Length: 120
Image (cartoon, rainbow, N blue to C red; front, side, top):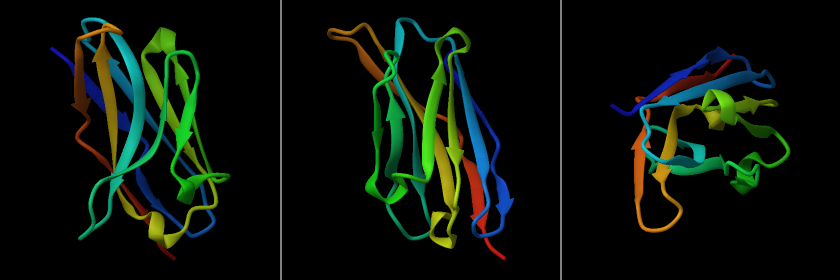
């Protein structure tokens, strides 16, 4: 049974930092890529960042220079270090992971979401 367990959300003041983590289990093949999306109230879900098993990263423009994604392949865990947080970063952050054999099998899984609130 595939599971994505997220942690690290919460309330932080503008300019502050938070670190999200997501641990995957139960995957059949390789987990590639892993990453984070977010959904603010009244808005569509959007990509924040993702990372391949080889360490290649992809960031949305609105987080470049502020957020850093990293991954521990041995622990099947992805991290999102969020610095210089702004009120507009307030959203539910979802972990996403793809179970892939690198050829034809690709299945995406989502975590339940972690609420991040940036407010004074």
